Structures are given as structure tokens and as C-alpha cells.
Image (tube, rainbow, N blue to C red; front, side, top):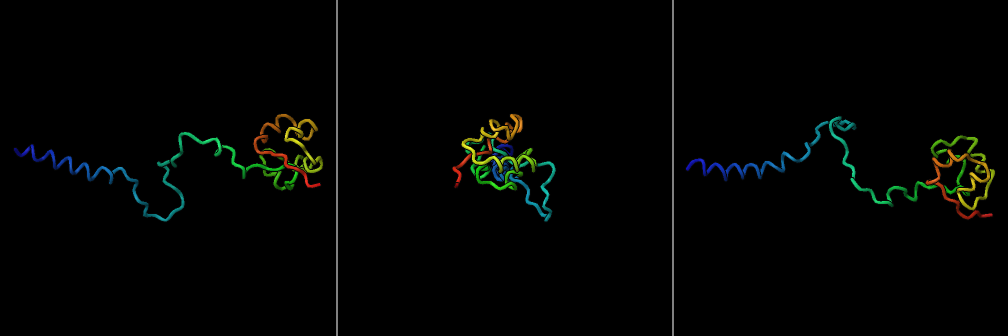
Length: 119
């Protein structure tokens, strides 16, 4: 009879302890670095809108040379050539006007837009 009363007590103990053991431990240190054993949770499926946010795009008709240099692989000379060759109807004009090579353009084409020039 004693074994039958232990079973409900064990189930009750596991029910109470389960969520406590599954929760992440609270950090008592004030360091800014996360523990090396844990990785930040990442979503398994990313929505298409999050892949190329509008804030990451650069308008080649109105961006400053500093903004253009922030693009991956962009040099000072490339940024200056883009500014001098304005206006552009399409980002692909950078290749057709021989401002950038196909390889350079391929690295940044998803981050470029060609807005209407104000001239």
C-alpha cells in the first residue's frame, strides 16, 4: 500500500519541478557577455519582409558618398563614380554605364534603389 501512495507524490513532485528545471537560470552576474554554452534563439522560418528591410536600402540618386561607402565592398573611388554618374533610372545602370563591374554590383544589388532625382 505504501508504494501506491508514493506514485501520486512522485507525479506531483515532477509536475511542480518540471517547469522550474526547464526555465533558464537567472544570471546573478552583471557582465555583458552571455554564457558561452547558450546560443540565442533564432526563428526557423524568416518572413520574406525581414530578409531585405527597407531601412537597409540606399538610393543611388540621393545618397551621400559616405552612405554609399557603407555598402559591402564599396571603395571611396566607387562611391565617387556613382555620385558623378547621376541620375540613374535603375540600379542596373551602374553596370551599363560601367560605374561598377558585374561582380561588385552583384554584392550590393539587393540593397540599391534608384529613386527619382530632384533635378
